[in-house]
Structure formats: C-alpha cells, structure tokens
Length: 402
Image (cartoon, rainbow, N blue to C red; front, side):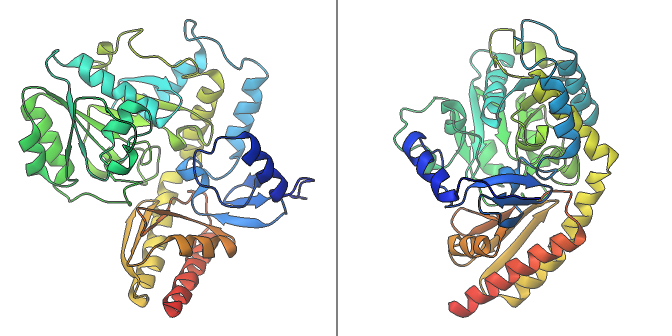
C-alpha cells in the first residue's frame, strides 16, 4: 500500500507553524497513517511505535473493531446533548462497571476532565468544611487549573498563580508524611497507583494498602488516577486490581476508547449521587461515537485475550531490558508493570529518543532521564524483541560515545 502523500513533512510543518498554537514541542516529522504497531510519515517511512498516542493507542493504531464501530456510528448519530438518552452510553457504563468494582460512570473527554470530576465529587461528598485533597510529588493529573494544582510539580505551576486552594503535597511512597497532612479539613487522597509522567515510578508494596487504611480511618475518599494505568495497561483491567487495593473513585482516559477522545470517572453507587446534575458536565462526554469506541475497545481486549497477552509481552520487556541494564553503564534501573516501562538513565534521555527515531523506533523521555515505553498489547513477540534490540543497540552506541 502506498503510504506517501502529495504533501511533504516540510510543507505540513510549515503550514502548522503558520496557523497552530503548539501545545507540545514537536519532532520534525509529519505522520499520515497508522496500522497496528506501526506509523508512516509523509515520505512513506515506517516506524515501530512503542509510545503510540502517548499511551492512548493500547490496541495499536486503527484497531479494526474500533474503526468499524466508529464508522457504523457516525453514519447513524454523531452527537446529541446529554439532555437525551442514548443506548451506547448506558452499555459503555455497564461494561466498565462489570470489569471494575461496580457502580456508575461519569463520562467526559479527557483525563484532566475526569480528574476535575473526581475533585468536585470529593468536595461534594464530604462535609462542607472538608475540601482539602492530598496529592503526591512527581504526580501528574492534567492541565486544567484544578488538576494542574493537584499536580505536585512546580514546573507546571510557573506563571499560573494564584493556584486553586485546597491541595497538600506528600512525597510519593511516604505514608507517614500523608498521615501528618490529614486534618479536619481533608476530604480525599488522590494518587496515581503508578506514576507515569513522573517516570514510571512503582510504589512500595505497603503504600497503596496504607493509603486505603488512612482513608478508611479518617473518613476520606481514596481516588486512583488511572488515566495512564487503566483499561489493561498493567495486564489487569485496572491498576487497583494489579495491586489488590480498591479505591472509592478511579479516573480513566487515554486508552479507554482505543484512540478516540473519551474519558470516565467511576465510583460506587453510594458515592455517585453526590455529583448532582449540573455540578459538573461535559457537552461531548459519552457521545455516541466515543461510547461505541469504548465498548469496542473493551470487547476487543476480552475477545483477543489481550490482558494475558500484555502479561506475556511484559515478561519479554522485563527480560530483554533487564539484560540491557546489566550490559550498559548508563541504565541504572528498569521498572516494568505490565506494559508500563521505564528505564532510569544516568544521562539525559533526549538524545537517545532522537537516535531511536532516526532508526525508526518511537519512544519517549520523561523527567529528563527516564525512557518511557507504553507499547501496544497487540505486538508480536518478534516486534517486541526487534524494538528492544534496536533500543539496546542505540544505548550501547551512546555508551561508547560517552
């Protein structure tokens, strides 16, 4: 199949720079098509993508069942206001409920919106004097003002003050620090069960159970931000199942719709009524297209036994990259939880990301020195090994250059 276009990457980038306000720094490549674990640029070059859609494309690019569901839905009904009922929205909520702890779903469009819903729910569910939420250093919860404030990283706060009142920050993994912050005004604890943007940081074994106990002892809501960890990323439907610690609220986005924009907050049937109609809303939240994509995503994971596949692939990454750590002086640690993978380096990771891209492998660097991989669960063994070997070759060559 011809993957080139009549427009070059250079032309696409020139037009972008004239008319678009950039939301991220960008690589000098224009992508035009994706299929499975691969994407192609405007010149027809194929890349193996180990960071597809920043974690949104857990099923790879353009998963057939999601494409079919969306194509079918857009020919019937694209959008109606949430003042009307649609069958797909209820079916999607039911599918999420059955795979989690039961309860109900609030639908929106992005992770930051889901976290805003959780923040409002925590304040509405607890007595009026309880409004504070404890979050964690290195965490990331989104870019709206509330979720930016919840993100305990000063670099995201620069120039945006005064920030929203009511957040207290504790070191990730430090139960004593959390307990010291709890007072009569505390409403909730909000945490990523595995920190993603913070560097794929896996908590100590006692940390999440300890947070559950603190929440129970003090009458607080425990909120798990599963925007990056949810919908099979860890080899379980949700990371709370991976750690066997049940929160009161989970927030989802990224891979929940197989690459289509969509998000949800899930909570129990007892807590859900506190988020009263009109207190939070999303015009496009749970729209028919996203709902059909969400259902197709969950059904694909079940039908193709992809939770088990994620565990199998995880073992390959653990073995190959663990071997690399033993062979490279610059790889200090390999952190793997399902298909969340972080390589802690002793050097800046940006040049390695660039060198991998030049070799047609796409990965990410976060926190300056952590290589982050969020590969799709549809990889073959051969593709996983190919990517690991390519990354190892780049790192070993970087070793020698150092």
